Length: 388
Ligand code: PLP
Image (cartoon, rainbow, N blue to C red; front, side, top):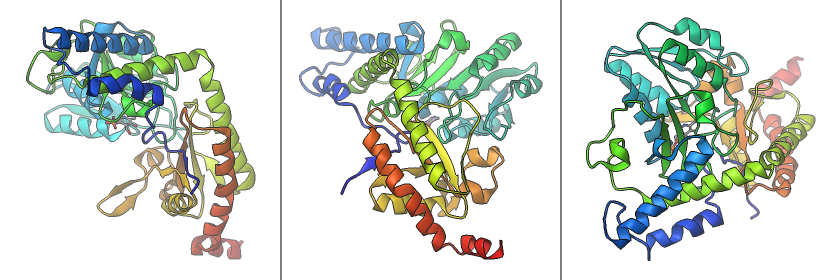
């Protein structure tokens, strides 16, 4: 069966070059980076070279990069590591659960948390950030790009407000890294999270940028790895892969890869909307990363559409998370003001470096007819057609 994968915000395939870069570190080159003998020093050099590559992608200095097990750990490390009981934290209602649930846990530990709203496009108004500031505000955590809609926040403005208020700024850039240029210094953040498997490195590796001079309480207790910021023997193959993926992301920017990606995404989006009525882009009108399109197809269940498309060979996803057996509408789309029905009727298409024009043609050849077929058997749609 011909299969096309447009769910790159869930995870990306490891690029062949990235796999080749990491392969020796499973076998013939195998030291512990803390060992002082040849094997250890060989490994240490590889880890430090990867750190340089990641630092270059993030616009920071290598010692400011802390390797972690992925985006969730990076978010937790930033959030738990930058505040203490009694502090006030500001975040937003559209964050990934790695941030929202970490912030909820802080509440249990005696912090106060303000969750900011977003507008209909999914954007946080910086003046809401300003209004939420209190003398005890220690941390603002606002994501750079949303995983469901791809909407990009005004991170620089929020960073400026944090700096003026003397608060730390953390941004979850897991869905931004490799898709838009990042510059930790310009964003004026103290911490920034990335994850390997969202940028063509493997699952289980990530990094947290921590600005020089920022005091960070570690999550784990153990050895002095990562300058005492993250205890645990380094995942060398994963780190080498993340370094290579960062290098390749940087080269792709220089070659205009993002423009090609957004042209393909726009062709997909416009092609669908030209053929399907009562559909629209969630997050339309806001700046977005070049690879993501979240579209509502009124009168159908997004989950049914995902399954129907999968049966035809196209992998996409709903923004909805399955909790306790029931499909809950996406908290991101609800926060944007979508009615639960429309939120449930939304699906996400997300492109990757491996996506081709033929993949877009394939999606365009099956999405409109699949939506039409699902609507034709939807009692909700038929009732509406009869009554209008
Ligand atoms: N933050 C965002 C915005 C994400 O999209 C994800 C993963 O979906 C994460 C954090 C968690 O990253 P990881 O899967 O590496 O733990």
